[in-house]
Image 1 (cartoon, rainbow over the protein chains, first blue to last red):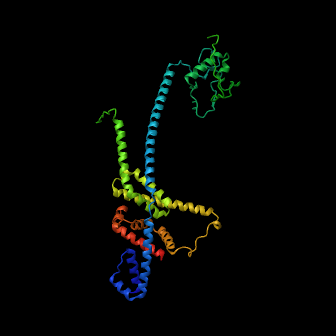
Image 2 (image 1 turned 180 degrees about the horizontal axis):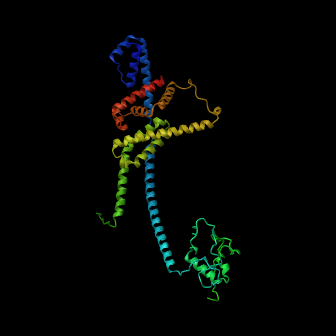
Image 3 (image 1 turned 90 degrees about the vertical axis):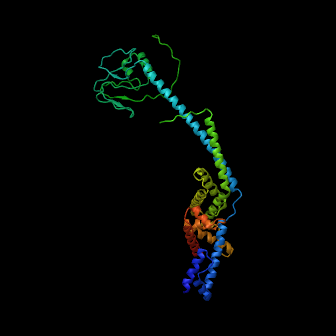
Length: 227
Length: 188
């Protein structure tokens, strides 16, 4: 056995943590001062290493560790209960909202069924001027090939085959509009009174846009002479 | 076929009370484990981080996590193995993020204003060796480092380490051998 082989065996036995060397290496070491010195140096290194590892791995546990964990556990459990109560509150709120919205939808549909038929807001006429008082059909002085330009992209485009365009409005609005129409003397001004005056020329397209109300004042309704 | 169950009016309250009792039971059982596993988690975290405050924080986080999953970890062996792994992983993550922060701060700091590193002469030989050892440990692969830490911990045999890590005893021995060998080479 040469020194290199012996030193390799020494390193392996120290790394494996065994104190005893195999017989052959042990015999070589006794006769070889170089290998003996090498063994002593490596033994010292491994001993220092083990002592250092022991001190790294066995640090004193701070006394605040366990109380700290217990406090955090208690907080956690309280938070859990809070979460459950918040969750149940959210469920109750959601159910209540659902019930209210279902009730509202039903109420609205019933209202629509019970309200008087108000017809169309905008319709075509042949050019004859018919009185509009007390009627819900509002004539507009337009020709049959008149094109409608829509300002709102949300509204569906009118089909070419449709001769009577419709604007769907709420029953309350329809009633208010019918009343408004009934009060106005000139039918020509009525049809486009919501957005702008009716164009003078017939080939100018009519523009329909959402009505914007900047401010609204509520007053008591006063009776008209006809009422 | 569906089965209809009549629920008594007071049953929901009883259910809540049962849940509360279960929770208290789990808490008591967890407390029993805490005395042994708390220090274990702390020492693993400390072995990686070598900072008492950070190690305590990581150990607490890991134990809280363990408590949340306690219903799955009632078996003591499983619990300890899981805790060892999660603590080690969390400590490594903390160390990595601390290193990133340190690097960022170092880039921005004025190098000439920082205190100069202590000279080798100023350091005691044992302290110097300890620093070298800790640096060498950081360079070890994670698997080897964990085995080295657990094997060096007082009160745990290699059999217990193998159970904790859920690996065969032979694997633990070979990892320990490699870890010690690599560590000695770095320190030589």
